[in-house]
Structure formats: structure tokens, C-alpha cells
Image (cartoon, rainbow, N blue to C red; front, top):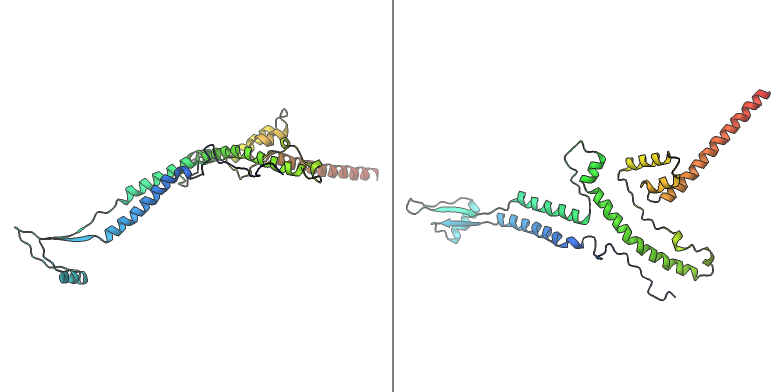
Length: 256
């Protein structure tokens, strides 16, 4: 029917790699560090005990483990020493390494971090820039551009199927009349976008529809414009009807 296999690929990027495929080596490194930290704890708990110039047989050592004490002889010429061989892993330095790799992974993948910072005087824009939300938004827009081409290929497939159906052939719109929209909750700089919308709506040289589309406040600017226009017209009609009713009542009172 279509002349080809009806499958459409939605590539995430030009390299056609997964979102986290480029950082698999670093994720493996974090797993390895976590495993080594546990090994370090086990080795610290299971440390070996050394006896220098002390002759202790198996029975004595078992008694030592049960009683928790040891008696031995030592002199200046042949000093005796009992100690535990321990070498503890520096957890602070290890955590610093893990945090570095984690932050690097977030940066490469274009994900915002969760450290929240330490400043209490940051503005909304500063937080967005500092915590990586602007980078995440830029990465999402790049993905949208890639998905846009695939979405158009998918729409071509659907429209071709509908045109082959006699019942829907007459109502099928052309491809250029359909604009793919990738809706997501975008609250980045929402106050600034609202100010841009108000400013553009207040300019009589800009069509209100352009204000809704280009302010960046709505995922679908045209749908927001159509909904707002309908609401505005309904409110204007209600106010007009109320004014006409008031004038009618006023005129009736004057005539009486």
C-alpha cells in the first residue's frame, strides 16, 4: 500500500546515540568506585593481626579472640609488637571524585543539577543559569529540531493513508497546514515572558497573534491565541449586553 515499510525513526541527535550512551564509561566508573568503597570497608573490618617477636600458636590465638587480651614478653634487645594491618580508604577524597564525575555526567547530558547552590540572594535567572536549567532547555530544543523532521515523515505517512480512503480524501489537509508541537511544561523565565507578552499586546503595530506565538510563554502559541481571542470576544459580548440592558432600563425610567 505504501511502497515501503511504514516505520519512522526519531533520532535523538546527529550521532544517533542514546541520551546516556555517551557517558556510559563514567557511569561505569562511578559503579566501580562504589564497589571499591565497599571493598575498602570490608578490608578494614577484616584486617590482619601481626605478631612481631611473639610466638603464638592456634590455641592461643583462639583464646585471644575470645578473651580480647594477649600477654607476651618483650625486652630491649628483642622487642615484641602486636598490631593490626589497616589502611583505610579516604572517603572524603573518594566522595569528591564521585561528585566530580556526577556533575560532569549532568553537564555532558544537558541535565540540571540538584545542588541548589548556597546563595540566598540569587535571582530566578541566575538560578536557571547556575543550576543548568538553561542548558537543559537548549538540549530539549535541539531534540525538538531532530524530532520535527521525523514528525513530518510520520504525518506524510498518515496523510497518505487518509488520502487513499474515499471517506476521508476530501477532508485531508495538506502537510504545510500542520505544525508539529512538542508540548512540555516550560516555566523558564515565566515572568519575563509574561512581560514580553504584555508589552507586545500593548503595541498597536504588532498583531496580537504574533505576541502569543513569539513570547515563548505557551507551548502552542496559535492555540493559546485562539482560546484567548474566543474568551475576549465572549467577555466583550457580556459587557456589551450588560451595557445595553442598563441603557434600556435607564431610558425606560426616564420615559416613565
